[in-house]
Amino acid sequence: MDLVAGLLTDGVLEPSQARLIRQRQGALGGALADHLLDMGLISYEELQRAMSRWAGQAAIGGIELDLADRATRRFLSPKLAQRYQTVPLCLIGRRLVLATAWPEKAQELFPSLHSAHQIHPELRIAAPFLVESLLAWLYGLPASDMAQALCSRLCPRFYRVPSPQAPPTDKASDRALEPTVKTAQATGLGDLMERLRDVHRAGDWLMELRRSLSSWSPQVEVSRHRPRGLREAAFLVPLPNPERPLFWLSCQGEGRRLDRVRRQRLESLAALLKPEIGRVMGLG
Image 1 (cartoon, rainbow, N blue to C red):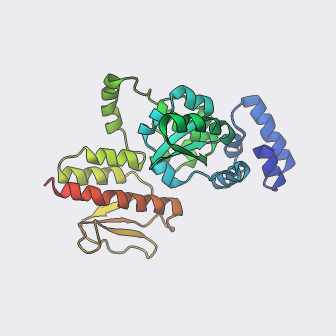
Image 2: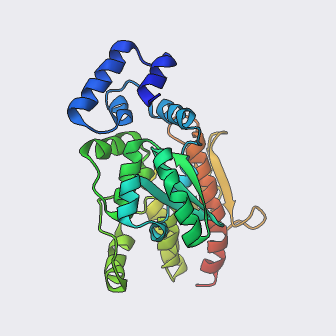
Image 3: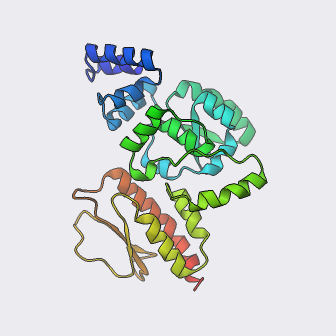
């Protein structure tokens, strides 16, 4: 049973909608899931839940996306990543988190990944458009126009993928790529922390942190004094600790409660900043 058949069985789609989606895919190509999203027949959250249930695997979450690290491309060559439509997102201990929309295909990589790198792969199910966009971000592989449009429309701002760039082939090209990476706007926590660690003056560090966070949606504030007038449901964390706070990290959303993914992302940011603040305080 494919995704459309499953949604038809669950009553999410009507028979006429299922026929239309199949005809559209037959004419235009691409993934069924992308056409479902593009036509507005299902929400992104509903699609993720349906794909997860259909595949029997956990759906990708905001934390995995936030931890996405370009260094993980060493585990899979661009050719293999594209062939299996699988993205190595992050390494947690000896667990390599992979994102894919086609778990059966991705599982064929498990034996070679384990034998070559002594790691334990774990799958997360992601919509095809997000897999394409992550492959473009990680390896510079091409993404379809539909995938790029869906990523811009459906993903939060901090998940959007910058323009594809070719991966470095040797140390010289790696050095040539560094200025581009450092001057590009941070799109995840890995990029943001890398930028902050490259700063060697406390004042510049704080300016860089504020500048990067100013593009987040909802906006995140970093202040030296406890902010006033925050709503009860707002996110507020003293850094590095409540006893002697040097900074306050706050976010109150945009006229509504912060959703779970954004709150988790802020909690991850606060945890990463605590040890980094200790380094900064020694810079002067």
